Image 1 (cartoon, each protein chain N blue to C red):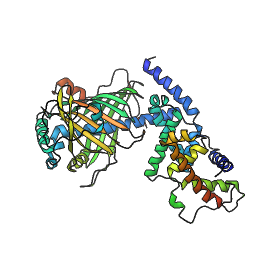
Image 2: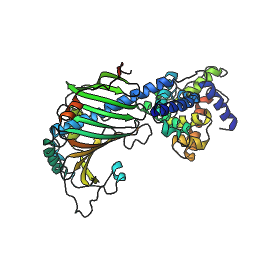
Image 3: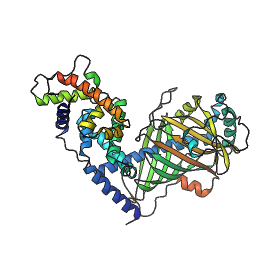
Image 4: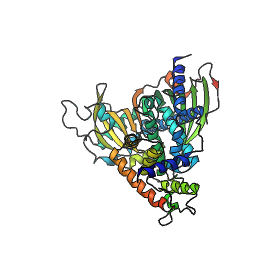
Length: 310
Length: 173
């Protein structure tokens, strides 16, 4: 095709695409960005719901004793591997021989002793939604309280509780936003009921506890390495999660989970699909002040109620 | 005014200016998907993501290229979710659009739009970026995330396919 033909093509394309003025509205763009941010919150809520399941029943490993064939520490993979080269090497240690079944049993026993604790989760999320926050979850009630700092919407307080009725997970959320000094309450259905025995929907951004159980039952958990956090050696278990993977880091001495890492869209390779969540867990005694903070909504003085954003 | 308010105002001002200069984004989206309404949605989703990541976008070598890459990913995502406005199946083999009147410019261009939609996404994007946006092969390669050689080959294949379709309309191509 010679140059005049290319010129003609260019002319035709311009003619085809002309005549439809487009004037994007910044306010609308910002509003949609806020909605995307809220969907991110729900995604995080589902992740926290998984943490509650871990704490309350030791489900994570109790159902997974059959995975013992994924035996020894393997090659370090994922972003944590690049974050710290010592991931799969404990200085002076002999070859690690833990199996998934062994670690599962120890973690289950450890969780049984902290089933009433308040779980503090210091989270950093990067990718589609860049924010950070500290989340407290009551492992007895499943309620959550979060102080969130988002690069778009600023600081907010979030109270979240979830309930599952006939397999439908619903989130009840109260949000107080400092940027507008308003608060709102809403109920959001996280996912539709799943037929009994249905497989995990691998593309869903959220997972119900039942789906988490299905995920664990898949037998795809494996030990991918070891790494030190604040001087404590941890064992890293990994399994599939949505389109990426999820890791649970457990203290090799206490066998309590100390970190959850989720890469939602690993290996997708596109800038629009890049979402990673790192949560560092601390297991806190159930004090009156913590229980009150997590389970009761406290709207800051001077905030006015607003309708939930649509 | 609090510092965060100032930061947000600066960001909005910058992004607003960027938006005012991206009218061609809508045209590109239309030629990629073949439907104005879908193009509107695609551009809106693209701008939402660009707004969220504005600090990163504005620091890119070419914010325009970065945003067009987001747009392409949006188109690709819709394609995967089978939300194509103009399914390829609308033009089965042997039933390519034929303009009844070769002198009818509108019909000829409609044939071009239909032919464009039958191209694989990367070839379509190559054509649109090069001949609508006027990008060089290097700029097109930057948006598509491929080499200049790939742009050349994709462009040649796309033009060959378009000529096959458009020759039937006895156009000047």
